Image (cartoon, rainbow, N blue to C red; front, top):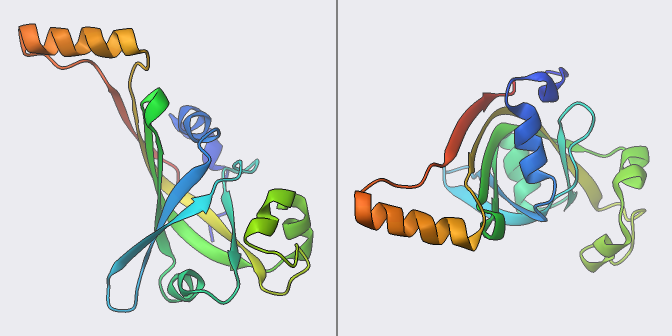
Length: 167
């Protein structure tokens, strides 16, 4: 897999800044029959290369789907700040105990009661290839103003939309 730094591409810094505080990402994988399956995943910070990491059970439908078709999508949403981000990339299952130890947080015991040494604990590393974000002004007054402006002039408020090549 491509090991380049995804953070170096134009627009990438803003994209990673937008998702760093979003706690949950919806991860979409492809089932054997082509059906898309999405589930919430606890978001970790991107690493120094811009790869995104998620904890999973080693034997789960999503790991089976990733093993068969590693193309995934991540959707991040923070309505309180009007931040919306989509990241497409390739995923791989990682069983590296040193990396599990590095990424482990005690709150993960909710999903992994036997802790980080449980043989069912694995990581999903996502190598981003493309991203897109929608960044809108976030204050209530700006939204109220935008609503009034749209009502009176027919012009919608300005939302920054940017596609980012991360490959």
